[in-house]
Length: 487
Ligand code: PHE
Image (cartoon, rainbow, N blue to C red; front, top):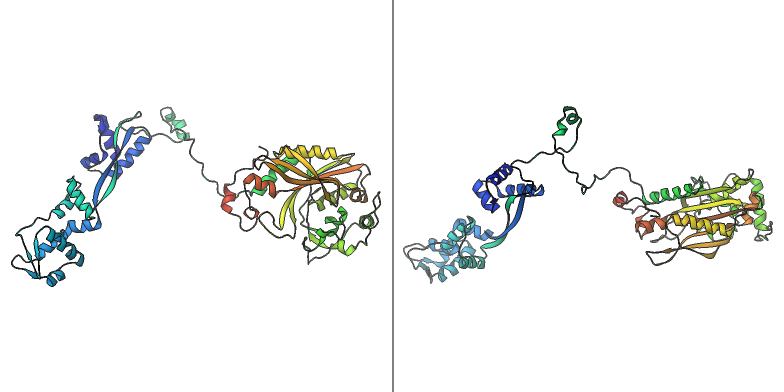
């Protein structure tokens, strides 16, 4: 309705100078007119200019007096025309506030005598305040001095009025065209599509939010890492068992039974089942021997190796337990070179803080082949980490019971402007590989890192509890971007 009126008016007239006056003249609601103007302006049917006006409106008190008369008027008319009225009696006839203000204003206007008896001083009064208030309510323009006086008595206040002046726009037409939003089968069949005009694409419109499952950032980063390993020709190891025996987690890795990491303070041991049922006995024998007295050119650790200690079940403290088992299995067949990787959960009995949890994920890669050197390890680390976007690497000598030499891996972080530790690596010791039965010239180069660290850096998370555990904000998981590893 309002739309036809506006477009129709502009067909015959140059402009609508003031939407307020226009609405009044047409008998339409100004808010409706404004909404239509905004919409027509959006489609360039019309050009609209803002008009802002300060207008006066009545306060609650002003409204009361516009209806019942000003306090001075009410007071005057409450006094009998013939003779006075005792003050107390007059007071009873009026609202306390009206009485108070009325007395002051009526005395000022010299309408009344305020003695013990209150009496009229003039025969006739005009309630100008009431009249002015009614005029303002009606939208009439009144004198500046009157405005000042009413404003001083807080009977009126300003309000900003928003309206428009309107002219034809570049797309003006006396009637709005209906644009088709979709090309339908019916349109194609009837040929109607030839004459239809289509709505333009809005490339700024946001897509509807996708409800349903969302991948956790750790899973997204893990997926990318898995792709990198697969591209480099690595096979994934079966890491689906969280429970291992101490034998596979520590002993096969030539980690002595007195090693501090094997303490219950550092490792979660199982109550039930507390021990493993079976281990490959001949291999156990060789592991025991290498711990106690060495062999293969090693002196061993020179202590009494305990089978009970090796049998104890635990939550694996590293995925290297699985790597060890895989290498053992590999040694049972004629030798073939292998590249293995895993990305899975490990557990450590640690104090939890903003960067540590008692469970986290390890990424581990290893290559098993004849005659590998430390240079091969450095080369493959450069290849691997550059695929994660870390091309500047440095190595620092380190110690692991199962590798020699061992190296910590540092990468230059452009954002932090410093070298940060990104992983640990080394060549598995002969004391670990030879008891398995691997040929003497077979070397294994390996490295490990946490999945949490790169995920936190990539997603800008600095408290690990925001990433993993019961305090994770599911809303954040929903809106997390895809993983841009190495981009
Ligand atoms: N297992 C090591 C760790 O827990 C990582 C590692 C894997 C180190 C392979 C060297 C070789 O930190």
